[in-house]
Image (cartoon, rainbow, N blue to C red):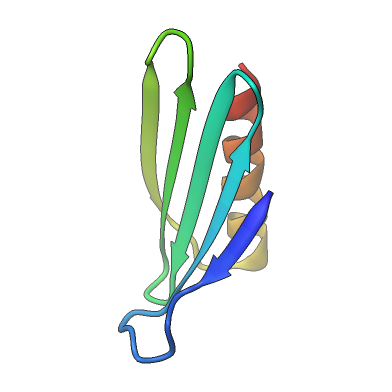
Length: 74
């Protein structure tokens, strides 16, 4: 798992979480404006699942992260 923050001069600022295994790839980006993007890909089939959602609380961010991990494990 890799976590990266956007450069300080980006507006909105963001944090990116990358997750990968031999079979799956996943990405969660949370922007400072309250939006999050979740992507998960199956390496072998090429199937990509994308989801955007609003995240306003820590619980929302935790839920988005859980969705990333569960999508990447399927």
